[in-house]
Length: 215
Ligand SMILES: C[S@@+](CC[C@H](N)C(=O)[O-])C[C@H]1O[C@@H](n2cnc3c(N)ncnc32)[C@H](O)[C@@H]1O
Image (cartoon, rainbow, N blue to C red):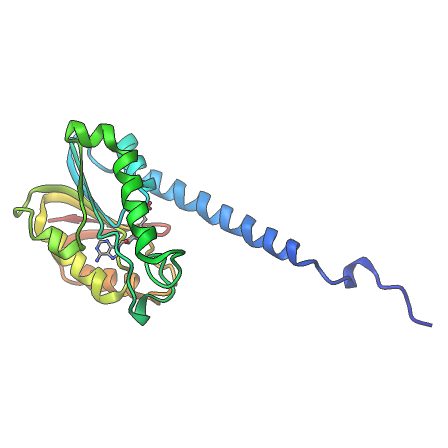
């Protein structure tokens, strides 16, 4: 006669798997938020900074709240990328509605920060990062936070472009150090190489956040 199956042998329902994945995501998100708060505690107040890659403006809101900048540039092309490299990116193949979605996200950012934009405290630049960097004079920025295109080539180009735009003593920080993703190890490799260039102190690593100081 067949033995009744114990609870431990019972197939776990799919919802259980989804719930566990969701809890794991919530934990990782909480860890990242706490790491970012520790990072922002090191940023100067009343300064001029740029976030490279802003998407819906969630971290921009934190930057405003915790660093109270004189001027905050939000730099993002809000464009849908069709290339195979970006098949797994939120602004590529993982997007829900192509260019319609990126336009809606851009519009939502203008709406979200309308008061700060009117005051001239938030300056939105709908442009790819390297093109936007070229509009800054040498030393114009006190800090830059890099969270745009995570491919190795793009992060390397961003580090170079925003290093130039920083004043001596300025901060060059960013997200996803040591995080494997569709970009493979692009962020980590570019940051490690940049560290070897001898032009900065650091990086200080706070979980997934990196922080260089321009010498
Ligand atoms: C991970 S999201 C940014 C999330 C945001 N920093 C936050 O934490 O709330 C990546 C963003 O990079 C943007 N992006 C992609 N390529 C870019 C480029 N070449 N220059 C600037 N931003 C870029 C995408 O449009 C997307 O909004």
